[in-house]
Image 1 (cartoon, helix red, strand yellow):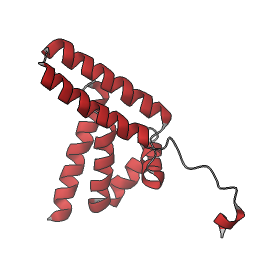
Image 2 (spheres, helix red, strand yellow):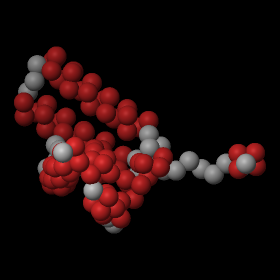
Image 3 (cartoon, helix red, strand yellow):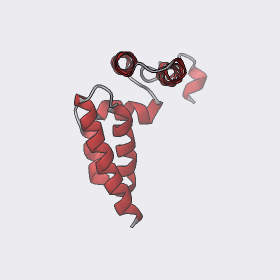
Length: 131
């Protein structure tokens, strides 16, 4: 039963990720990461498919191995957050409290993205580290 629940959740998260490709306010990457985690617990075949996917796989592998977000993905994340906030601000016309709260939430997300490495750590030049 637990395996079936993870499988269903994985499919739902993957569908949301694909919707996020075309909808500017819906993120793609967090849903792909969560779907891969669900498939790891329910379907090794689907997990392997995601990891081997030409567009999604490299980012998933980097994330799992190093907690890394590629520089290109970071730029897209920052642009998406900026565009999302601008759309929110100019269409909703929120009061100052809501505008600040949403801005703080986006700043927290941007800070998290900025805190992640952009790739694997550089190889160590200290021979002691290889032992």
